[in-house]
Length: 151
Image (cartoon, rainbow, N blue to C red; front, side, top):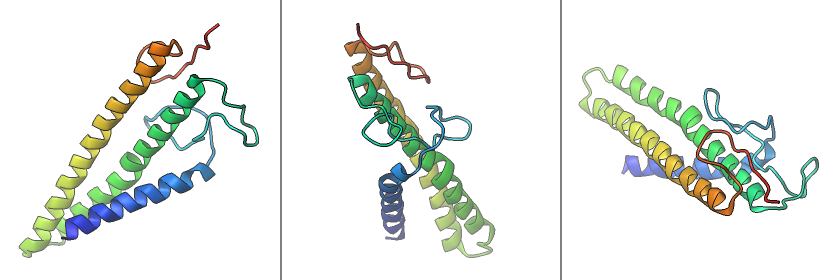
């Protein structure tokens, strides 16, 4: 029951951050490693300093930004905190087998979550790249997202 509450808390926090994250807008480099991707989330639109969206390439670029941001939150924010909580629970368990089991379960769920996030990133990025390559906007599957506007 506590695991389900933890998962609900994790999902709610992820959704909350995902909905409030467009308020952040920093450097424009779609790269995840080594510090994560923290913005800007929108690459085009009607806001100040944004060029209007004119092609599928712009939408795909924004989708990649959102995916990178979500992965950055999961890998660089939630995973270390969860790993620390699980490790601390194991350290302070003493002779309490319940606390030891709970700490191990948190560590196991965190590792599963990291694997799921990275696998889903691969599937989604492959899907977006396939759409872009099929439409002629992008060239291959790599970390840099360079759109080629059709003539």
